[in-house]
Amino acid sequence: MTREGQFRNPSGCAIAAAISRDGRRFSADRIIKSMIPMHDRSNGLGGGFAGYGIYPKYRDFYAFHLFYDHRQARREVEEYLKERYEIVLSEEIPTRKIPEITDEPIIWRYFLAPLRSVLRSAQLDEKEFTARAVMHINTVIDGAYVFSSGKNMGAFKAVGFPEDVGRFYQLETYEGYAWTSHGRYPTNTPGWWGGSHPFALLDYTVVHNGEISSYDANRRFIEMFGYKCTLQTDTEVMAYIADFLMRRKGMTPEEMAEIIAAPFWSTIDRKRDEDKARLTYLRTVFSSLLMTGPFSIVVGYTGGLMALNDRLKLRSMVAAERDDMVYIASEETAVRIMEPQVDRIWSPSGGEPVIVRVKDGAY
Amino acid sequence: MFSIEATSLHHQALNERIRAGERELTVENVLGQRFIAAGMSDKRIDIHGTPGNALGAYLDGAVINVFGNAQDAVGDTMNAGQINVFGNIGDAPGYAMRGGRIYVKGDAGYRAGIHMKAYRDHIPVLMIGGKTGSFLGEYQAGGIIVVLGLADDDRDIVGNFPCTGMHGGRMFLRSSCERIRFPHQVTARPASPEDMNAVTEHIRTFCDIFGYDAEWVLDADFTVITPDSKNPYQQMYVAN
Image 1 (cartoon, each protein chain N blue to C red):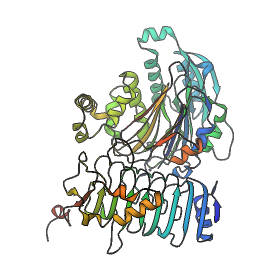
Image 2 (cartoon, rainbow over the protein chains, first blue to last red):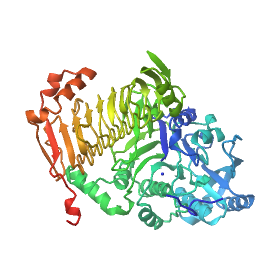
Image 3 (tube, rainbow over the protein chains, first blue to last red):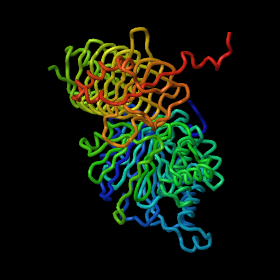
Image 4 (cartoon, rainbow over the protein chains, first blue to last red):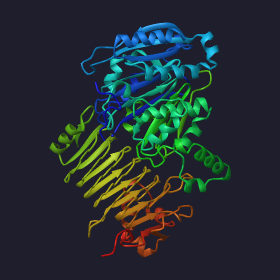
C-alpha cells in the first residue's frame, strides 16, 4: 500500500466539534451525524474522530491506539512498551465489519502507566517520556503507528467516509464531553489510515480543513525540538506545534492562536500598546511557527478546545451555542443537524480563536 | 403552493424536483443541499431551512427567498434574477456575479462581492443589511455593493482590508467610515445626492422586503468608494 509521503498529487475537507462546558458526557452519535450534510466535502479517503472523557475507568493511564501492518510489529512494540510501562490492559479495539471500510490494519489499544524506576533514570516528566516513546515507535518500528496517546481520550480514524468510520469503530457506544471530527479530501497524499485526521500527540488533537503552505518552514523549526514529521501531511506538524506551545512552553490557547495566525503587521500597528507589545513579541520570537495558507482547525485537549481560521479566512467555519453546548463546523448545516435550535450562531473572523473551557473539576 | 420536502434528498435530486415543479414553489427542510436553483431562469422559490453552498450559482432570472441563513458562495457567477436572504450569509456572496440582485437582511462573511463585474446595462447589486467581514469587494471590477450596517452593536461596518484590488464599480457604506482604512487605489468620500441616485431605489426595495423604514435608513451618512483608475494594472506591464 502506498503511504503518505511516497506519493503526492496536487484539497476540501469537513471539520466539526461539539463540547459541553459543564463536562456532560454525550454519545458520539451527534458528531457522526454532523458529517452527513457535509458528505460532499470528503471523498472517502479519510475520516476520523477524537473523543475526550471516553475512558473514565482508565482515566489515569495513557491510552495508546496503534495500527499494525503485521504481527511482528506488534511483538516489537509490546516488547518496547513492557520495558517502560506497566500495561494495564491490552486489547483489540472493537470494530464492526462493514462493506464501506476495507483493508484495515491490526488495530490495538493499550492502557499504560510509566514505570517509576524508568522515569526516574530518564529524568523526564511522564508526558515528555511518553511523547518520546510515541516518536520512537512511529519512526523506528516498521509497520507500527501510534495514532492516539493521551489520557482519558482517544482518536479513531480510517480510510473511508467519516460517517462510516464512526460506525466502523462503534463510536455510538462511547461517551465524551467533547468530540471533534473530520472528513478528508486528500489532495497531496494518497490517503493512508495513519494520514487521516485527527492527528494526535498525548492529549492534543488537530482536525484541519485546508493546506499549510508554510509546512516546510514549520517542520524545520519543530524538528529542532525532537518532533519527527513522518507523514509529509501538513496537519501532523500542527499537532506537534500544539504540543510544543501548550505543553512544553506552557502557553494558553489564545497565545497559540496569536502565533500560528499572527495578525498582519499593519493590523498589529493599530492595536493598543500592551497588545502591540505582546503580538510583536510572539510574532518575532516564533516567526517560524506562523502558518500561512488556508486553514480552519479544531485543536482538542483535556478540558477544552480551540477553533481557529487562518488570518485571511480562506476556509469557512461557523460556531454556535446552546445552553452548555458549543458547536463548531465547516458549514452551518452541520451545526443545525446536531442542534436545530441554537441560542447564537456566528462566523468567527480570520485569526480570531473560539476557545471553549470545560468547568474545572467537570472532566 | 407547490411544495417539495427536501429531507434527505441529494442536491441533484432536489434540483430535478424543482425543475419539474411548478413555477412558484416552496422547498421545506433544506439542510445543506448545494447548488440549489443553479442556472434557473423562470422560477420563484421559497426556501425554508439552511441551503448549502453555491445557492443560485449561475442564476439566470429566477427569484429565491431564503427564510434562514445561507452559506458560502451564494449567487456565484449569477447573471440575472434576485436572491433575498432573511438571515445572514456566509463567505463570498455574489462571487463574480455580473447581473441581478442579492439582498441580505443580516450580516455577510468574508469577501462579499469578490470580483463582481458589470457589462453595459448588466449592473449587479449586492446589498447587505448588517455588517460584513474583511475583504469586502475584493477585486471588484463592476456593479454596486451596498452595506447598511443596521446591526445595533459596536463592530465596524466592514472588517479589515475592504476594496483590496478594487478596480471598477462602486461601493456604498452607510457610515462616515472614520475608522475604516481603504487602500491607496480607491477614493472614499461622502456620497452626494447624485451618487445616491444609483442606490436609493434599491434601498427602498430592500426596506420593503425586510420591513425597514426606508426614510430612516436613508437619513444617514453614506460613503461612496470608487477606484481611482480605469486601468490600475498599467504600471505593471511594458507600454506598447
